[in-house]
Length: 282
Image (tube, rainbow, N blue to C red):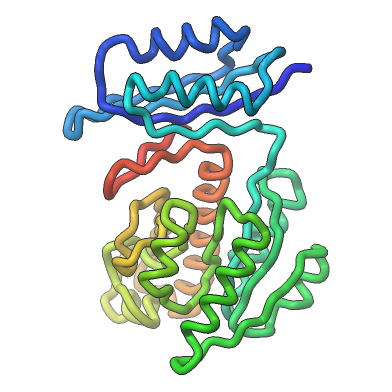
């Protein structure tokens, strides 16, 4: 039986890495279907993504053999079978455009996800969750119970074995502790083309300043608010005739598209974190 895998890796750059990786796969009957690499001359790091098919390899055996091989190059790496969609938990508050978009794309077969649960600090979208047969967890968050609420949220994430947490307009700031626990696997959509118009009511700020571009930014969540490595951004052009409502509508469309692309690339293991930046093999 043929199984397709995706291997991602990063390590200090040196000669012979591509040759060594290709040789390792060849020795095990691996057929490379897609490969991309990047040398960051500023940091001296090498990044690579390889999709390959293998007839004989047992996943556990392949992981063990690759782990031993990778030590020679001091690699950070991940190996995933493409038959396993990424287990995902989505968090949302009162604005559901991104949630609705992700659910539709998922059910349409456009995202390789296994959406295990929706977590919200409001009740608005329990019926939407039910229509997609996804468990809905309402966890109210106040300044007095934030720690207990986050503990419950993390409990759900752990219980579902979530490899990805999507903040689909979840309008609560995560604690430093939860950010650390979710490092590299939590994606947020920011309703602005960062860095710009941070905080509340960004479209009112944009309208007041007479901007000609509005945008959205999808980034990994870190303890530094809205400063995590950026995955994707996009903009929409506007002019003086646009009202706040027009900007909001355009902005929501842009947010949904940007978040969907970021989630798709992450779930296809195309995004590698490079310090404060990302390397994306599209």
